[in-house]
Image 1 (cartoon, helix red, strand yellow):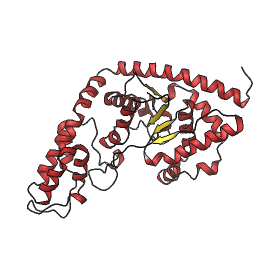
Image 2 (spheres, rainbow, N blue to C red; image 1 turned 180 degrees about the horizontal axis):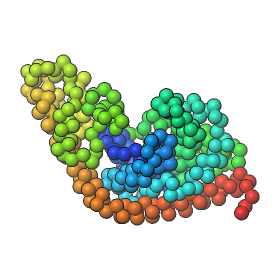
Image 3 (tube, rainbow, N blue to C red; image 1 turned 90 degrees about the vertical axis):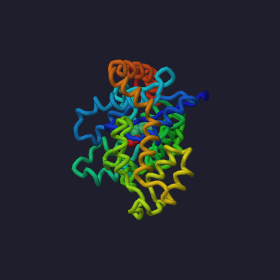
Length: 327
Ligand code: TRP
């Protein structure tokens, strides 16, 4: 166990899918063996894009339930909801004073959102990475598991830490990102990255029957039209999913596909079985926890209390460094 601290935030926008699991959740679980970990349902961040704010509460509970079912262990780690530790909002405001608007408007995710929702370019949206910097630095985390797309936000976090340290004295470490080794998971269309909004995802909490049905709808090699045509695993997304979910049998599947010994329907049947096998334990625990929302709420309350101790300590130090008048 190293003394370094891990922090990560997960968005609370509805159902998680198997791509989220491989890209982030699995890493969250593994890091607990080596580090002190803090995981946060970023409900305030979700307000920058969520059309229906009433869903934020239920979605926070739901995504935390998924994390717990996947193996985030409240006995070893802290898991909590962002808005339950309001100190982070205060730190974000101090950081806002150190962050030029010109830097924020150049952030790629901001530019994307401006395209997507030109009618709602609010202050919170442009400040999104500042709040994320505050998330990480409130807990002085050294390591941050994130997807590649979040790298510019982490660079900005390091800039904010450096700037604060230069102005007010050494206070914050510069955090490093941790990426998963899992390759990018494409969706059932075989084209775009798996994502809920693209409608090409397999939810991790899907039933076995739903999983089988979804896998059956997946795109395979478009040149393989008849059962007797040999397939090309290199261009087939079902095969790439086998590499992740059926790692022990890829040589055999490759051979059977290229010789047309096996058809796409059977090949998909094997994949559905592998996915169902991978998530069987998760799904059982998920169903159990889903039936006990009060237990999940209690875990999150306890997590917030533990997180808050750290946050209050950091904020007291920050106010002192800045030179604000003590109350
Ligand atoms: N921006 C992250 C995402 O979209 C979520 C997030 C918010 C986060 N705060 C964080 C991730 C702090 C890591 C650390 O996925």
